[in-house]
Every structure is written in C-alpha cells, then in structure tokens.
Amino acid sequence: MLAIQRRDAAMTAPVQLDAPDIQDVVRSRTLGLAYVGTVLVVAHNAQPPAPDDWARYCELIARHQDTATGQLVLAEGPGPNATQRQQALNQVPKDYVIPPTAVFTESSLVRGVVTLFNWFSPRAMRAFIPGDVPGAARHLGLSEEQVRRLVDIGKTVRPPLR
Image (cartoon, rainbow, N blue to C red):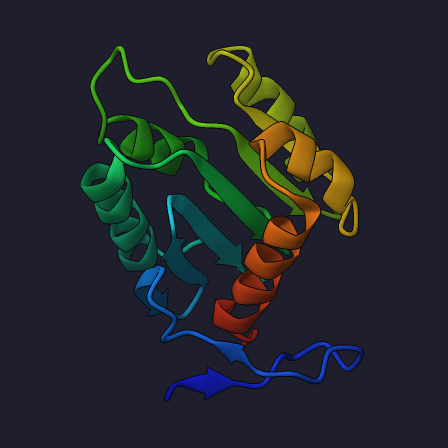
C-alpha cells in the first residue's frame, strides 16, 4: 500500500494514493499530478514548471479531456509561463470547454495570471487563497469534504523544493 505522510504538521493521517479512484500519479521535480475520480489535481512547488514536467501535465490533459470535470491546483510558485499555457491549450480541440479550475495560491501574481487567463476562456478558472475550501467547493461543484481530500492529495504529490 502506497501511503505518504502529509507534510502539513497539522495533518497526521497518511493519504492513500492507491485508492481505486486515483490514477496517473506523477511526482516530478516541479509538479505533482494525480487524476482523482474526474478531477485533475496539480501541485506546483515554488519553482516554475520544468519543460519535461509540463509535458507530462499536457499528456494528462489530452488523455482525460473527455472525462475531466474539474482541476484543483495548489500553486506555491509562479506556475506555467505563456508558452506552457499555450502548450496545454494545444492539447485539446479549439471548441473544448475548460472544466472548472480552482487555483489555491498565496501569490497575487498567480491570481493575476488566473484573471488574465479568464479573459480568453469562459471564466473556468478562479483563484482562491489557501483555506478557502468553501469557495473552491462551490466553484468546482463538489462538497467541501471532497475538496479537502483533493487538497490533501495535492499536498502529498507536490514535490519538495530542491
């Protein structure tokens, strides 16, 4: 059984990454990824996404474009650059509707990028301060308990800063 201790001192129970609804777990140098049910969980550490790590993310977008109902992102750092964001958009058809995406971040820069991204998409992305589980749950159409679990999984797969 694959159990990883949560890095948050306040959380002591292990997160089980071998649950039947968790697929495509990736923990690379700058990104952690997991497809949970129909939600893609993405966790950035404080470094910008490395090109090879971003390519894995793009592969998951392409693979799950017909089934994904949302994304939950934990962003410690600057997130993808403009080229990487375009690479992600290139993985799906032009008429693809981006599923609701909740981005948890302390960074006002990342929150600004999310707002800018919404100028070009149907307001699918919203940024939240960490801990605003109720707001993210409303945006994603999930229960607060489901969002807390997704956040815990994101914290588990997020790579440490090296």
